[in-house]
Image (cartoon, rainbow, N blue to C red; front, top):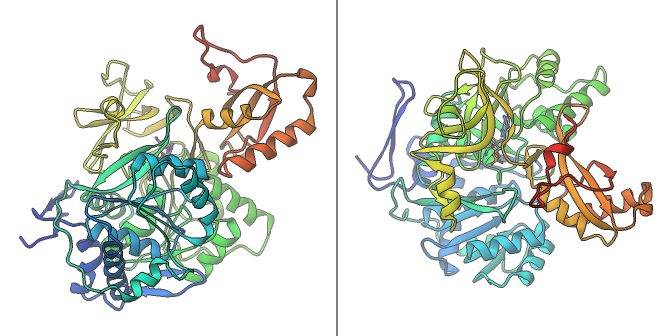
Amino acid sequence: MSDNVATVDATVSPSIISYSDKFNVAVPFIDRHLNEGRGDKVAIRVHGGGAVTYKTLAEHVNKAGNALINLGLVRGDRVLMIVKDSAEFYYIFWGAIKAGIIPVPLNTLLRAKDYAYMIENSEAAGILFSPEYSSEVDLALEKSEYKPKITLLTDGSSECLAKQMLTASSNLEAAVTTADEDCFWLYSSGTTGGPKGVIHAHKDMVVTSQHYAVGILGISDKDICFSAAKLFFAYGLGNAMTFPLWVGAEAILLPGPPTPDSCHEVIEKYKPTIFYGVPTLYAAQLKSIESKGTNDPNLSSIRVCTSAGEALPPDLLKRWVDKTGIPLLDGIGTTEILHIFLSNRIGNVKPGASGLAVPGYEGKVVDSNCKEVPPGETGDLMIKGDSLLKLYWRNPEKTADSLKDGWMYTGDTYYQDEEGFFFCCGRSDDMLKVGGIWCSPVEIENKLVEHPKVLEAAIVGRKDDEQLIKPEAFIVLNEPHDAGDDLKAELLEHCKSGLARYKYPRWFNFVDDLPKTATGKIQRFQLRSD
Ligand code: 3UK
């Protein structure tokens, strides 16, 4: 077998994937398309920007990889990416991988203290960022004890990466790596402790693209993909980058925030065939469509929509399908497993369920002894498959707690019905998913307690009118007589100014005390309204 080849036997289900001994995943995802005659086909269209062909993509990936090497980065170095959805995101991510450097895309909505933590935790050799995020990154670099060798804007300055790429060679030999070797990281958050570095291997993007995108979505080079979820999420990374690149399809990128109006504009203009969203956005899109009466956006190019990040309420699913006639598939994925492993199918959707196991993955619901429970009984969801993280960076305890004999605890509570469909019953910890994005109650509580008038705070999830979870605050004040709408407004501002923008509490309640365990741990479940 030649080097850098993944061979797929799709005559069996699940398809069997094998890898050449030497395997750098940048070659099948980027260079292969030139050998297969797709050089002039469009790979990426940026809303408000230009189009990039597969040939230009391959050249720019090489230039970016060479620029990183020329800047002094070496194999195994981590490079943090705080980069908006853009062609540069692709160049840096794949250029790094091809050069054996490890890209670590970070959530661009985070704040300086989050970035400072990640800089220190990863001991990154480099940090690359879009100009939009300069102020948070500059602050983070000031705060961080650890100083990366290279800090560089992607574009827009005399020293930026785009400038370095101009003079870099457009030829780059792929670093000799193997299918199981470290390839890229993503950060995942938990209720306690800082975010954890999730290490993925070269083969993992092949596995998710083949099993989910080909197996469930039936993606082909005729498809045009548009993901409202950004590339820095594992969900968006697959949707708008690895899936189209695996089959030679086209991706549409929206650099700005995904609002109903901006998404409808992109859909009408670029006519995607696959649209990937999150429940909060589908709810907002429906609201926008319903409020505009007769001028419905033209969504007719879309053959399938996906929903992930948080559970899709059955009523929302029904309203979407009634209004648009487009199938909407709820599926659950995690950063650790990289993409969706339980999913509904086109033509086989059960409202309220996360679906059946995606071929290539196995799922089971277990009790506290790790023993499988019968259908209808609730327990912990465990998943087995070939795209599971290798390990959490410098966190052997968490790695050992999460992985058992090739199975992974997802941290979700589920039950299975008689037909094998999986139903989500919430998290087994207190973490919240708000608009599909992680939200630690502890982080919001800590922010509230920073306010001089707040003695203690607890955050729980509460369902809004669309049945979607948002944070609700319960607050004990130092001086109970301060309670009132003015203080609520002040606390809201306090949270908005210091936290990522989706994390502020939508409801504030002043209470005399918080329910606690004997050891003083807040019992958040006692405060939940459902
Ligand atoms: C929750 C869901 C119910 C669940 C993700 C698609 O969300 C992704 O990854 P994250 O690491 O979060 C994982 C956690 O989110 N969740 C996600 N999808 C659903 N809960 N129904 C769903 N459909 O708690 C899970 O453990 O941010 C989503 C693809 C790749 C991903 N990484």
